[in-house]
Image (cartoon, rainbow, N blue to C red; front, side, top):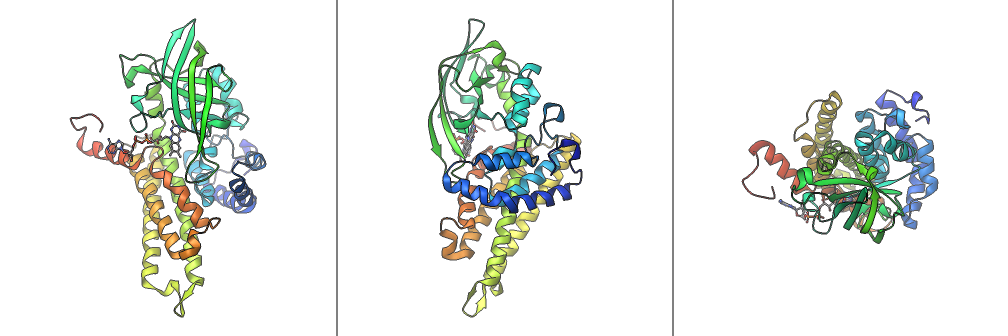
Length: 387
Ligand SMILES: Cc1cc2nc3c(=O)[nH]c(=O)nc-3n(C[C@H](O)[C@H](O)[C@H](O)COP(=O)(O)OP(=O)(O)OC[C@H]3O[C@@H](n4cnc5c(N)ncnc54)[C@H](O)[C@@H]3O)c2cc1C
């Protein structure tokens, strides 16, 4: 892929092939070295940026590549050959929110450098008492001295420990609840009263760290509000369809790689005088994996096409996210099984992928929440809270 947006290849197949070559080439050893060191190599990020993969979905006028959604998903699928780790560097979700809601001044300050990976952002929505039910946040912001004072605690903010700014949601009108009562703020690293109080590693990649953030009488000016006061919840929800289809694309990419690894292994590993690939039990595992991946691809193809045409996709983003995240976990489990002991050894790719994919059933709306939304699209809302 060229560094120049004007040279971007319109042909998704070419883009996919170039990305695969890049991922299987220099990215693979640099990512493995980063994983071993527990920190992302700046050299790898710079290489990815130089190859033109920064700001993929950010508009060209703000320094991004302005890829079509289908091209973007193809790129994600190819990077996912190494697991879901790079997904969060490539997806631009914070920048897209600034692009959609930001003022020209906010876009100049945050979006332009973000598109070039000179600034990194993180989302601080979840709290100890508010995850799936994001509307239950307790962090609050009160108007004072022409700005806002934020108090509260956030957790599980992906890579916030190294972010230059965070998108923080806070209650600004306790009487109004989620619709009308939550506002999003752009808060710079180093703002007095804002601290990263703790960083955790998750069970997957060591490069995907989750941070706990504290806000204590943290003053931000009035122009730190992103979008309209009171519309922070709606703003966050408006990014979900894109995000879920992007996650589903990454799941398909990881699953395809696992299938490739399984297929190579069973052809060469012999037990009781024959290759594993001759055994019906093993062949059915491969067959089931092929069917589940193809189903994921078909679901995605339809939803991505609709999204690109600007048509409503209804519950399809949830259907894709649910199927693909559950599917990749089943396939990762099969892959570990057909690799036998080798599948459990640290450093072997299937072992790493098995751990890496687990969070895909929890993040970006857990499977139960996707089921809730799918059921709601058929049955309507039940007459009780929480669903
Ligand atoms: C790797 C990772 C990265 C993350 N990155 C970010 C980030 O960058 N920014 C951010 O703000 N947050 C982030 N999160 C937080 C993530 O959004 C939440 O973990 C997720 O929304 C689930 O919330 P919870 O952990 O509080 O679980 P809970 O909401 O407590 O849910 C626990 C379980 O109950 C189920 N459940 C909940 N409600 C219902 C219901 N009504 N019916 C049936 N089942 C239900 C859930 O599906 C889940 O299985 C991240 C999480 C992970 C694991």
